[in-house]
Length: 499
Image 1 (cartoon, rainbow, N blue to C red):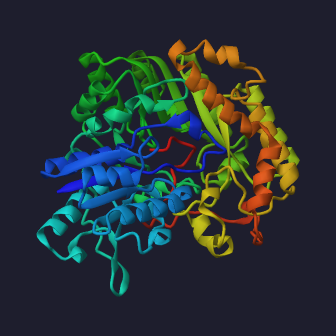
Image 2: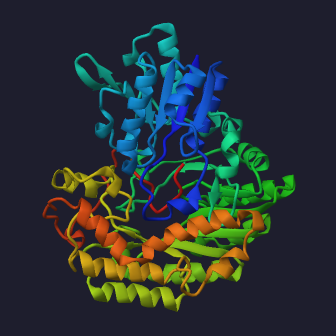
Image 3: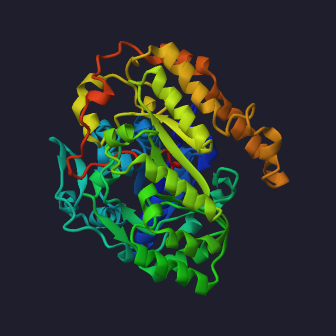
């Protein structure tokens, strides 16, 4: 059966690091590989590039169209894409899946969509396609929200977690037409590799661990080596938690070394306590790339701030992890959370911490109740009517303690202290010297767009235009934010690329 898999354009990139990160839709590549293994004919179209959805529907004439919804800020855009598909081909079956779809499917329960995938698409999508092909009742397909004559229903969950080695390696050829458009920071093109899925920790702002019940699955070392070897020379490892199992991580590093896998650039995501406990992992992995960056969820500059978000580490771990990583020539990137309930002293404390430890490569996102977290479930009724595009962690969903004008003055000043401020410590020339001449136009466009984050007036203008009537929200610091342990998925723990 012909299946068209679509990655929609997110639509809202006025704020944040979206322009710096545009990576391949790895989840769709895994689904495509699983469909091929069952004899089907998948096509992946990345709508962040041209042409649009209707053109791809006419070109491929699919029986099933799958639409990816990785972030809650994209709910509206996904519904628009489904309507466009339906206009172009009223008879097709429209399925939506992805991170946000599984976390909080209700915004997607609309007439233009036939089903929503609530678990690993590599297993659910082929089962759905084969049920359609054979005329089997769709209620027998697991892990779906399904539109019926009597309304939306849920089918039974998958009997067990899908073993990652049961899924073929991603069908990267399905996005070959878009490859040169995928980039991270100053590296272009970039490949995405997944070696593990899930996270055993319990950060309150994160929905990843809730989706997987704090489970952690790993692909076999041999399969990961093959995947790394087939990827290009700039690789972002998509695992939410890299180096979680030291023994396996050392084995993987040794296997890559023996295979002769060496990259121009690697980026992995990990935690400060992982780095502190196992510096031998960093030592073993460092020779595998010319440039090697870590992305660490720094989150807060105080022990109290880290405790508030259930990070289960202390600031001393941040300081030591940064020291260890830099001693081995790793680049240290990270993200801090900015609480709308902050006072001026909280901003000043963060600025001092960033300056003291040279953390200007960090990003700064507004603490947001993301769908799939207990925080969101507690206050969701009070957020009714807020447009989904504002869940990008750069918009306010309620009036901040300092008032919007002063909050945005301080928030913009925080970003001006980062290296993205080309009027600051790293100017245009320094950025351009890091890249090939052919990529100068790309980086110029990206940096130009990110300068908007340095201007308080830009935030305030949009805030005033979209705020409507703000609900009364309890102080973020007064809300106990803990995970329920139920399978619910929203956004990743930190600012991360859109896949």
